[in-house]
Image (cartoon, rainbow over all chains, first blue to last red; front, side):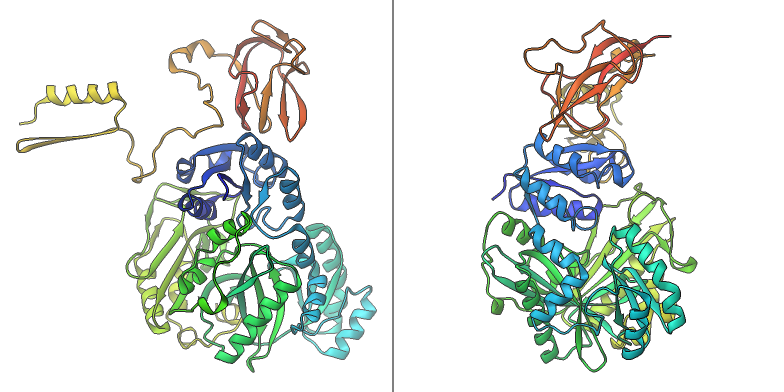
Length: 445
Length: 147
């Protein structure tokens, strides 16, 4: 097991990783930008090293400084968290070349799955259905128009090197397609350094259901069931729950098995998430696979009872998974609300600033993952996440009632937060029935 | 009746022994003394730890540092006073420097980076030692700038 781990991230996930390390008896080294100097979680680390000014490109994204910090602090491994360098294969390689383990998958599988075109080809080999697509990048606009005419609109233009909901354009007809193609290529080149784009049919009224997987270096891959993340706005998730209220047992089983096949085909180890779209008839299609621990991992931790971050660390340290698939049981219902510093009444405009009052919810089956406290400042430089509020009860009705109660209790002042929209969601009849799809949020608000 | 002298005694004891919280019950009286600002329990308002004890400028010498310009570390790594163990240090106290004078080496990931003074003046104080681990923004030396 590692003696010392460096946490290459900030905020609530840095604290999450720190907690996992402490329980495993591992010493912790945190890095921070000058803007994060006063963060209280740094006091909990054995060592904290300043790696740069506030701007992320000069601090949390500065791979060489992070590895330099890892060297001076003499750590055995680096945990990248999510975002920042978590899915950067170069960084994973650089760590391992410096004889520092990267707590995550192999760089090779990151590259393979990070290329959405390669990932879809892999899915085909693993006999996992994908959304009807161009089976490769589109070379020119005429080819694109021909494919779209044959397969039908609406069509999504997607960047091969994109992911996480970025680099996606929806077009409803040929005129819109031709109009958007050049811009899509340019955007892909700028944002992802790769202008390759492909087309995909839009799956209407679909649910977004993802499967949590964990692999070890001996080739074992397990799944930890699914999370339904259909409540999204502009591809950013707001609410996640497990189990998915839209799946029957048979579809669930097939989905989870398909996820394991994808991970195995990619030679994947560590934590990962395989994302699918499920249509109203229960037919599912692979969207993409994320090669990191995800924001919403607590949902799975609560329904299965396993500490996923600790398992990432164990796998990275060379341990094999000590449980069998049949030992992983799904208990109850867990729901997470992401509480962000955004104003739902004003197009979810970010509302950074100082938090004067912070009173989180509590009680039976309530988990709050946050590094925020009264007096903390949400910086405009980083993401707008304030806290993750997760509840876990025996039935969905109880979980929803618990969450509604928690949302009433949870007080954050004076900045605007997504608490207001969550309160509305948890009083909306469609959501209460579990009858939503990925368009629900944008249609309703 | 609270004995002010007793409270004063306790406060001095706290300072002497570096205590933050003291609670004393004497018969029916309890005296509760707590130092520092009201931050959330468990989170101390202590300075953040750096790789090795950073040479924080002691308060008593703060006045003497007035007008001095720090040369701050632009990266993370190990500080070396000279380009190699056989060579003399780039600078020492009293050395005159120009903005592009090399003042030290910071080694990171096996790469040796020469750090420039960025200011013209005289080295007045060294704040770190040879082979010390240093972080971004850490003051390495103080320069009395040429007026």
